[in-house]
Image (cartoon, rainbow over all chains, first blue to last red; front, top):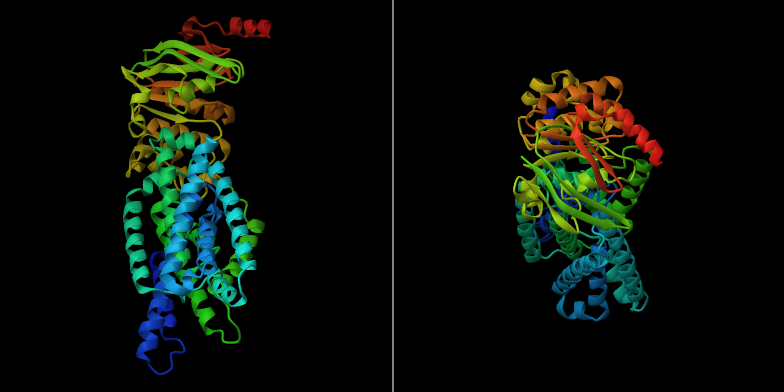
Length: 313
Length: 224
């Protein structure tokens, strides 16, 4: 039993990778396999891991098991960047790199704006930060909607495809850069798991345990924001993954960060791979991975609301 | 370890807190005072949660503001009122996280063996009294010379109150343990010192043996 608890998610991951690589491949086409199947599978694994991992940190940071990294407003900021790249026509001139740069730049600008407002408001607590994130997210989403209603039909199709989440728009250089950043973040966070554990408690308690809560709140916020900006720039908006994977991991492994954050990542990879496989193998109509996860995640969220009384920390 | 409030002043919303007092001896300090007298403010100032407008708080000769947050945990531990238990942590997890001791179990069993059945329970599933007991044990497992316990007695039944003070007394020769409560009876029964606050100022600090609870209660009623 313990074996399956510890290694089960990895076994599932291996099975899913195999399915993702070989299902309906037919005769072996080198080009399809190396240029499409492998990069798309890696994209799903890496983006899924990053979102699950960021989701777990976000839930600790905001002391709320219903928190999702997208709630912080960063993804909406990044999406606005994508919309601007399409609106200005830059995407058609420079291709996917422009999407990546605009999405990341708008994501980073969003981090500074949200923190600038947070510092200006003066009340330094998690609720203030969360509220600023929500309001910022709503404002940038509205701006994106304005752009969407003012661009041509041809452009709308491409932009919507992106905003609904996809594992198709990969660029190997961007993907490698993201993997390096993710590994660095993982190595650093691994050394700070005890601090993350202590941040679960009230700010007062965490301080009395020797945690510089103001410093680490900023650091972990930036980590979440960076990971989310990257994932949006690579595969658009994929919601609910950051909510579902930490919740599954918490139910199996408890709340200790050393297990929670890493297994949340693995479950994130598994969930996104499942959606990717489903999306790729439904031929009747186009079904973006982001939409699959939003529907499943929405139902999951409602079940959580109905069934559990331990949702509030 | 001497804890010194050196002309500490804090003004907030028309309330002025002022304290100039030194706590030299180890032992249990029962902190009493009517609502709004500054008992919790005292703990929040002593643990650096809030900063005074003027004056300084010193642990031995070192100003609290000069001690980085990471180092402060070597000086004091604290249990604040209304700390919510987080689901998914067992009691053993909680004690490991808060004491930073990887092998806390033998220490726990040696000192608090009667609660050994708590160890694998989820802290969210403990009763309020059990959760408070776990937090008190957590404070005593740490080797800090000063301990602050804010309104912990309120949620304990008679048996747990008795056990709690039994544990506190075992550690009181090496620590200063500040216990805030409105339960003057139990504090006078178990404390070494009584520290009373009134309107944000020190009313008195005296040995428990010199304290006359009836006179104090009578005075409070007259003032009211």
